Amino acid sequence: MMYGPVEISEAEYPRVEYQRRQQFWDPIRLALFTLAIVAIIGISIGIVTHFVVEDDKSFYYLASFKVTNIKYKENYAMRSSREFTERSHQIERMMSRIFRRSSGGGRFIKSHVIKISPDEQGVNILMVLMFRYPSTDSTEIIRKKIERSFYQSLKIKQLPLTINKPSFTLTPIDSKKMRNLLNSRCGIRMTSSNMPLPASSSTERIVQGRETAMEGEWPWQASLQLIGAGHQCGASLISNTWLLTAAHCFRRNKDPSQWIVTFGTTITPPAVKRSVGKIILHENYHRETNENDIALAQLTTRVEFSNIVQRVCLPDSSMKLPPKTSVFVTGFGSIVDDGPTQNKLRQARVETIGTDVCNRKDVYDGLVTPGMLCAGFMEGKVDACKGDSGGPLVYDNRDIWYIVGIVSWGQSCALPKKPGVYTRVTKYRDWIASKTGI
Image 1 (cartoon, rainbow, N blue to C red):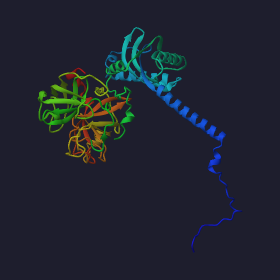
Image 2: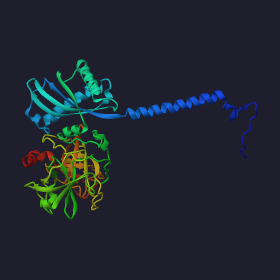
Image 3: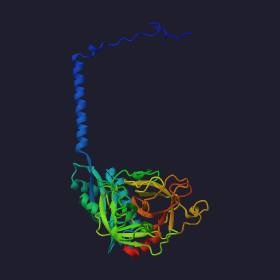
Image 4: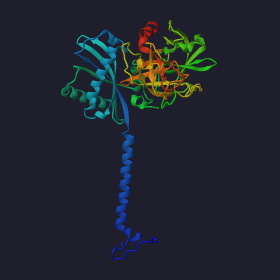
């Protein structure tokens, strides 16, 4: 049986008469249509103009105020101390609470405590506040808006800290001054537009890693190069003259005059280049067991901190990371075992693995000592590799980055049950301080 088109009688399916096209364009309709088009174009131009003119811009302010229900502690003077870190996080959280829920709360971006100093009534706080407002607004108008919402919040919100209202001052600053103030804080990443780079921007992307997305994503990463032989190891900037790296990087050559250091997301061309003036290896470094695989290199001339070059924070010796904590490893090393060095910096997200698991017979059979830290995945696949040695394993604590490990050793790269083994930085905090004063 063949299937042909179904015939429907006119009675069942009434024909629709379509108006002929030319009948639509009578003078009234044409005028209305023209008006509508003109209106749409006008509105579009208005919207575009609104966004061009009302384009949001970053505004920075230096806030100073007294907190009367805190007693000053000596360790507040040390920005890398646990006391300073915890207290500044509390103050930054409070600022977020003050501005995020106030009118125009979406305008608040971030705050950073710069200094906690003693005062007869408690402590003085100096901090940077960042906001986004239309570029047409003046810094003075915005300052008044911020002050208004600040005082309103103090009236209606239950806050953990008692702020002395008359002591609050707000001073507009430009992005250069803001960057200079933030340079006194470690572990802060910024984009080229001086906006903070949140931790979430570095999602999973070195073996099975990915090329870094932008300049300034890992601004403490350095490449240690032997003159005439090129990239040998990674390193991390911990001050404007000191780098932290692995002792085994200097097996071939310990002469500082033979080494250079570069910064930036590519080895060639480098963003910044420096000579090395001093190399300090750990006195008890054991080549056979990889114990105390840590070294310091000092630059002959200091680097200027910027969005591209920045120091990472050293952790307090009491910092503990439980197993399965998300951490990042970065480097210019090969992406396959015994492969070539990469010109572009790569990154990978890995997880910390407990020493008890790492020392199992089927993993590293007791070779992991207390000065070491395992990170990776038991199924392999993501790992540091040759050429990443000496580079950083970093941990993000509320958008402030800490170096918790130094790429040290591992069996091959990314093999199952053979995760990366790193020098555990918290164990060497006092050693670093004794050599550098940091």
